[in-house]
Structures are given as structure tokens and as C-alpha cells.
Picture 1 (cartoon, rainbow, N blue to C red):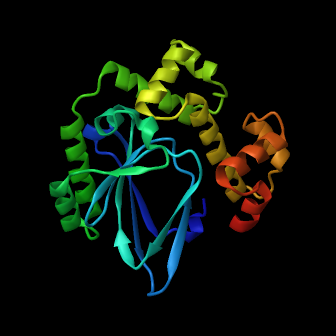
Picture 2 (picture 1 turned 135 degrees about the vertical axis):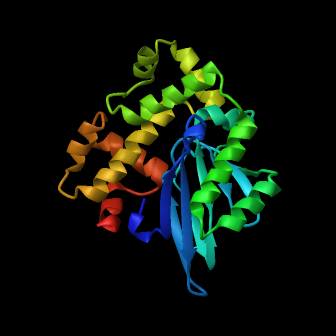
Length: 247
């Protein structure tokens, strides 16, 4: 939410062999003076992540609200933003891990990543990608359809309703809801709303001249109040406060 406050941060593409299982890799690195804390606020993608640290690995489930993490000292993480096709391997029901995380037993992978980081993040990414490929295997046709569903919601700004997505994929709304429950852990409408909130936050950061009424109309909200209420409910602050804080 506040890019200027980020530690050193890199986003790396998934290697070709893992592209159906990982959207991208993200690697923050930080070095803070003793006694200092850096609070990182996040509007997460409606997805799960596999995250490696120096001594552990975890899967974080999909989020329903803005979250934050307090960074201290010196550290790093290697995160894989999982595509829906990879999720069932880690989470039988991702709905049960909303706004939560669970440790993953992968001591060999943790050792590999620790040996590479922070000096060689590309090797760390290759190791994590290879581990995910071996663990998950080849995705099913249904899993690939779930990938297509999320790609459509993320990329097409004309998608405003669940019916829009179902029509584009030539499936029923019930099928779409089942895919989202099994492979994402959030309802498809929540995924659409999250994309619109991310777009709203990005516009507030990059286009100070845009009026809030125009922004609401462009993103498909019925009016400014509807956008303002959803922004506050999910992110915990008002549109005007966020615009002021990032200006």
C-alpha cells in the first residue's frame, strides 16, 4: 500500500516449468538499525503464498482484509505467489486458512534457500520452483480452468460481476463458485472486489488529479460512497486519508 516504505524488494518471474503453478516470486530484504521497526501494509492478492525464511517455510492463505508485518533487524524472505492449480497440494480447503498461515515441513528446501540468500536470489527462486514442480506435479484440466478464472478476473477491467466471469468461461455460476472455493479459498465476487480495490489504491498513489467520483465510476462502483465504504471496510482507512498518506 505504501511503496515508498518498502525494504529492498524484487519481483522475479516464475521459471517456465513452474509458470502454471506460480504467478511470480517476491523477495524482500531489509536491514534496520537496532531498535527500529518498519511496518509494511499490504493489500494481498486473493491467493495463497509459499514463503521461505532462513529457518522455516510456511503457506499463507488468502486474505480478506489489509494486513501488515513489522520488520526488525536484518532479514529476507523468498515468496512464491501460488497460482490456483498449486493450492490443493498445500491446502485441502484453502477457505480454512483465510488470514492465517501454516508451517510446511521442507527442511531440505529451507537449507537450499538459506545457502543462496541473500547473495543469489535467482538460484533460490530456481530451487523453490523445482521443489514446487516436483511436489505438485502436472495440474489437472480443472486446475488449469481455475488458473484461467483468476487470470480473467485480474486482467479484464470490464469484469464486474460473477456472471461476467461465468459467461466468459462458458460455465455456470455454481461451477465458478466451486472452483474458487477449492482453488482460491475466496468467493469469486471477493476476488473481483479485491482487484478493484487494488486498482483504486494504485490510482490514488499515481494520479493525484483524479476525483474520487470519477475513480468510482471508472472501477464500476455505483457511486463514490460505495467505493469509500468498501475501501474503509477492507483496508481500515478512508480514501482521503490514504491519498494524503501516499502523497
